[in-house]
Amino acid sequence: MSEASRSGPVAVILSVDPDRFAEVVEAARRAGLTVAGEYPVLGSLTGTIAEDRIPALEAIDGVESVDRERIVQIPPPDSPIQ
Image (cartoon, helix red, strand yellow):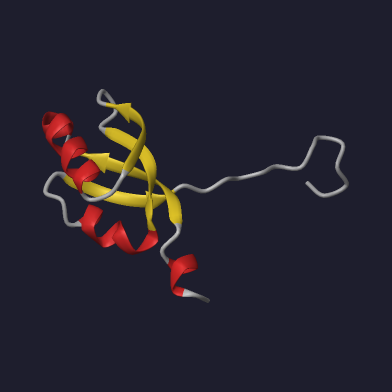
């Protein structure tokens, strides 16, 4: 795998301290996160960042977790595999 493909953008979901939400969002942007959605009541935000910058997000004071966004697909109801 080439270096460029390892550091390509990945979608992430961050759980953050709701009491420090604005501060954490700004720090995440400085770390390289392109914010897609902010959910202060839930204490989470979504966005994309280069794979190799994820440790920088995890190191931000107030970030509780960083998870890669996953897409789950279920077969249609009439599918032979359930």
